[in-house]
Length: 326
Image 1: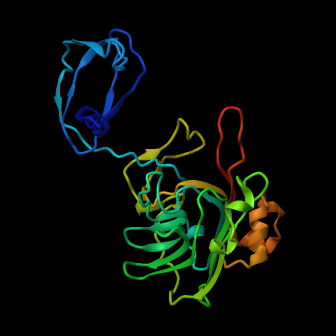
Image 2: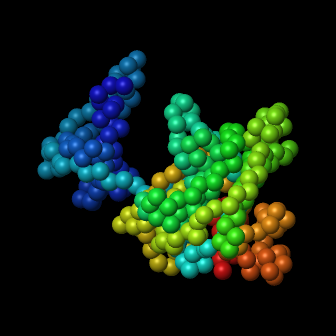
Image 3: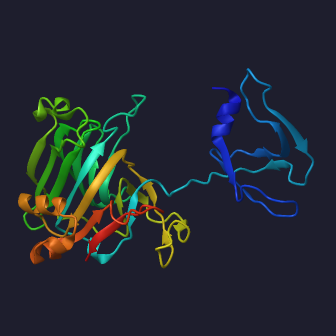
C-alpha cells in the first residue's frame, strides 16, 4: 500500500451537501485517525479516473480562503451495527433467560485468519466495570454466559464446543439467582431454507452441539445503567452522541449512544429476554412464537422482550420492533 493510500485511510471526511451553487455554504466534516493535521484545498476536477492506462488524475487548485493546513481530530462513529434498548428497570434482572437463533460468520477468526476476540449476542454488560449479564461467543468460538458483579468478580460459563461458521444455531442461557444454577446450550438449527449444505456441515454433530448445567457462586449480576445491546456490549454508557430524527423518526426524544465493544459478526433472529430461568419447553415456545399475546399469561408476564426483525418491513424502509417490553 502506498503512503498516499495509507494517508487516505487515516484521514477521511464528508460534505454536508452533495452540491452547491455560487454563494451557498457547504461544510466538510473531517476525521483524522491519529489526530494528524491535513491540507485542505478547493480544486476543479478535470479528470478523476486514476487508472494508469488512462489520462490519470487531473485537477486544478482554485485559490480560496479555505486553502491551508488544519489540525486534525479523531472523531469516532459510535452508531455501529447493533440493536439498542435503553436501560430501564425491566432490564435490571437477577434471574433471567437469554435466547435467540444465531448465524455466526466469524466465530473465531476473520476472513484473513486474524482472531476476532469476544463477540456479544445479547448483553446488558459494562465491559469496563465488568457488571451486568450477557450471552457471548468467547475467543475460542464457544457460547458463553457472563455474570458480573465488578472487576475480578465475573463468572463465565461456556459450552466448551465451538460454533461453526455460517450455520444457524438455537442458543440460550438461563440463570436462577435462588439456586445459582446456570443452563447454557447451543444446538444446530438446520432447515431446508437456512442450511446451506445441510447436515453435511455438522457431522459429527457432537463436535458443535452442547448442553451444559452448572452452579455458580455468584449472587447474581450487579445493576448498571448500560443499554441492552444485541450484537455488541457497552464499553462506556455515554459517548456524547445521540440519534434523533431522520432515519429515527419514531423517537420522541434523542437517544444517547454508548461506546460499544465486543462486536458480533453474523445474523441474529428472534432474540428473547425473560425475567426468570425458563425451562426447555418454555424456551422453545418463546422462540417459536412471534406474538407475545399468543403465550400463556404466566409465560407472557415472565417475558421482558420479544423482538421480531421481520415486523414493519415495508416498501419504504425496514424497521426492527419489539413485541413486548414489560
